[in-house]
Length: 213
Image 1 (tube, rainbow, N blue to C red):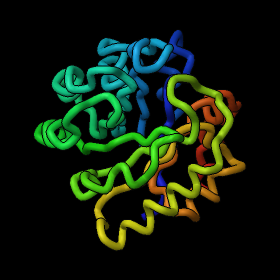
Image 2: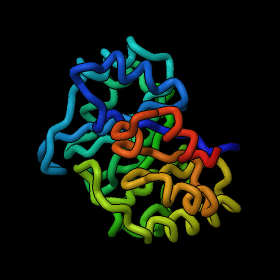
Image 3: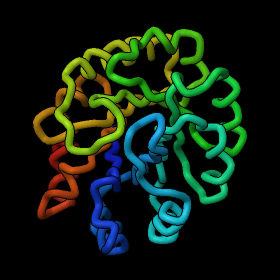
Image 4: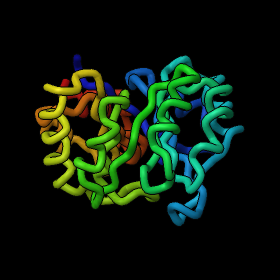
């Protein structure tokens, strides 16, 4: 499988949202960071914004919940029509139950690993996951510097595919043309990029660079 690119609209120009989405023809997925101002310091956007994006594109929507009560968001996001949904284990008591609830809506379920959260924290649940989101920055802000240890985590996860072959590896945070090929070589399936795409003059060229084309 060739690597997929998920454009994170956190760095988009919200005042010209339709134009921004139209310029993302080369991307595979639209990534949405939902922040509640509690689990992370920032607030981002809510359901009306996501609904607006859903009306603007048929591309898969990937929601990353940086919130204290992720279970509260699942049903509404399912109604909007997202395809991927990830949460942080630190925010829930029963990860298995939430994963199964997400899947019950036909959504791919994932868990996000903060930079300080080890891969072995997934030992008891990896077999249930559709994907793992490796955070290569601390969650909550765009345009942070990439944390190289994320590459090691990707390699560790990729090695686990010998036992659990059905999950995907996604990386989010500081992803750009300088590190994308190392991440792909390590085994990344989905690269999330925000400012590298949206700060560029040519979104398609930036996306192709991330893919190594």
